[in-house]
Length: 241
Image 1: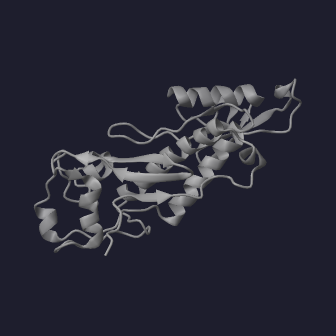
Image 2: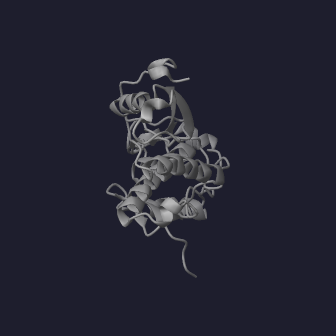
Image 3: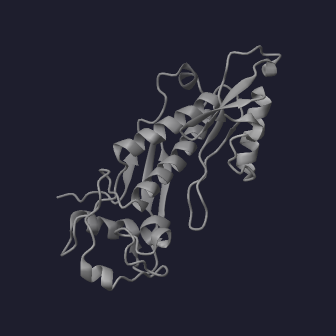
């Protein structure tokens, strides 16, 4: 009997019905898929940090004995951290996860762990399969709500990028570093030679669309501030409302 793979894939993310996608260059499609890669990793990390499995439901709870004697090879263990991550984001389940683009598919896998001498996906496969006395805990997948979140953010980014508006790539969460959503100024029907004739402009920040006063320049200033890390989140900044 063939064993289940020690990776998972996410596909069907592309805006297949968008004429801009149909006529996009390989480089443009590659940029979109790079955004998808980061978003898949980000949403999977949020899912796992919440103690949820691939189906979006809570992982099997820890036994009392495990809580009382919890340890981690990666840092101080939190007895009440979710399953498979006793040191939270430092734990190998989250710190060794990675992904690559294969065609139009994002393949998520785990890198080699020098402590166990195995790819960490192999260890997680034992948990998924309930090997020995292990409870079944499956983190090989992205739940439907998380997948929808990836698609929404990626398509908003593409809407701006494919129409040559200003954009910024997302950043995935890493130990000690926060994630950043994809950023994109969204197209609006304005005169080509006078883009600031409109009093406001829409800016996509992940799944959220803000209306920013000052037209394209105001939105570009807010996008640049978020990218530079100088945006404090004040609602009045650059006229965001």
